[in-house]
Length: 77
View 1 (cartoon, rainbow, N blue to C red):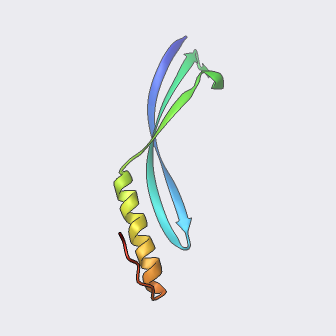
View 2: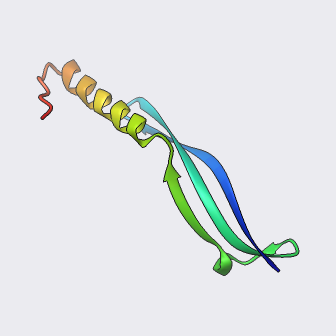
């Protein structure tokens, strides 16, 4: 048996009112490997969002656009 730490990347695609938001996610997995067997009870994970500032900016723009198309004035503080 050995302990392994792997990092994988995936994407979460959100569809909000016709707006597609692609969020990159990095996951670090630590687990006990016994030959080719991994027990779920030995696995733990840490989740990291890549470029969270870019996601925040994309969401801010989408909200501003949403209000703008309805003729609302969106005042950011």
